[in-house]
Amino acid sequence: MSGHSGQASPVRAIGGSALKGTVRVPGDKSISHRAFLFGGLAAGRTRVTGLLEGEDVLATGRAMRQMGARIERDGAAWVIDGVGNGALLEPEGVLDFGNAGTGSRLTMGLVGTYDFSATFVGDASLSRRPMARVLDPLRQMGTQVVARSGDRLPLSLHGPRTAAPIVYRVPMASAQVKSAVLLAGLNAPGTTTVIEPVMTRDHTERMLEGFGANVAVDTDAAGVRTIRLEGQGRLVAVPDFVVPGDPSSAAFLVVAALIVPGSDILIENALMNPTRTGLIDTLREMGADIDILNLRESGGETVADLAVRHSTLRGVTVPAARAPSMIDEYPVLAVAAAFAEGTTRMEGLDELRVKESDRLAAVAAGLAANRVVHEEGPDWLSVEGRGSGKGIGGGVVATHLDHRIAMSFLVMGLASAEPVTVDDGTMIATSFPEFMGLVDGLGGTLEPLAVA
Ligand code: S3P
Image (cartoon, rainbow, N blue to C red; front, side, top):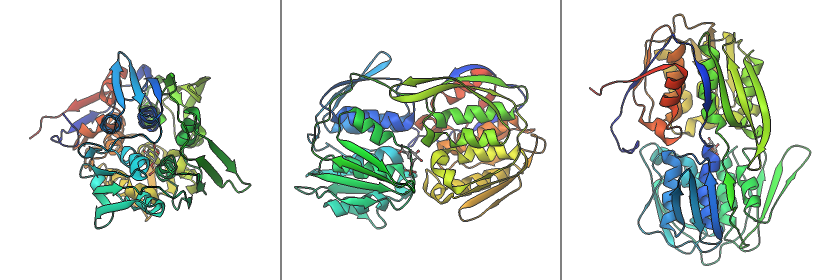
């Protein structure tokens, strides 16, 4: 069943049982999307292991197939025969990205400078999300956009005969926008320059370099990064590409172990790239017992195993500057905060309003439904912790087609005095299809409910 077109399926989390054991988180979603995109573009055969087989990533793989890449599963690996830079084919039919913001926005960049038409569609959540952030720089490069008002999906792109390379200062902290402009630059003559005032996840720059692109990054004294990419160069396959485990998926298990009394778990193979570890830093400031073990290199990234034990947490203020390194982790941090002693204040959350749902509003509503005292501002959230699960729970949470809202509140239910129900668990398959099974294996109780 496809999560975005299927029927909602509620799930209930029941608290009480300590989590114990060892788990390995599936591949990183950001890197998996890019593995299909860059492997599908680069000349030669890329073999990918550890790929996240979530619906979002598979949609990106389908789109690359529609444009000429050969992509096959071979046991535990994915084998990709890329077309060569500049040689994508006009897609047959529409490109359906389902729920996937990253897949759709990066692919818009990739094809936006090709002299052909490509049509993008998505589910109700993706069709509400702002696309102007990617379309504006593409227009500067010469792309024609046919979109319904407000630059939202469904939309069609048609690139110019020869795209203009641009210098683009990214106006919001967004790795997707940075990446879309760089990918558009791959098919433009000369140098495309992206200026990034606030550093976001750097997987595109790192991986493009690994696939042989001519890309250079300079960082000035104020931390402003300038990324220069030479367009129309060769991209070459990476024979053996390893995807590290997703820290944003690990986050749910980390918080679950911290807040369920008696828990003691080991999470293997989590990516430790500093652009992704803001949640671990924050939880440690809150007093979390997290050991980072066995730090090692894997596929050009640092990974580690995380030993996590139930902990007494204290409220903290999370500075706005940390937001890019934990942008997807605020919903589950809010859950951790509900079980801390004192107030946790999170600032600089404006980008949360334009995720798979308005995550700030969805988190606030979920906290309210489960009797957690909190205050929601335009770009901040404060949560009054109760120090234990007493008095928390009993609510039904509206997930708004948002996988991270679903998983965050199921984690809350694992530690709450009363069960927590989420109205739809199907979207979990977009990023973390193994979530329910892994929680079950650790001893937690998640029950799918019959649909009325
Ligand atoms: C992503 C970037 C982030 C993040 C998303 C994945 C990426 O989005 O929220 O889950 O892979 O580049 P923004 O660029 O919108 O911040």
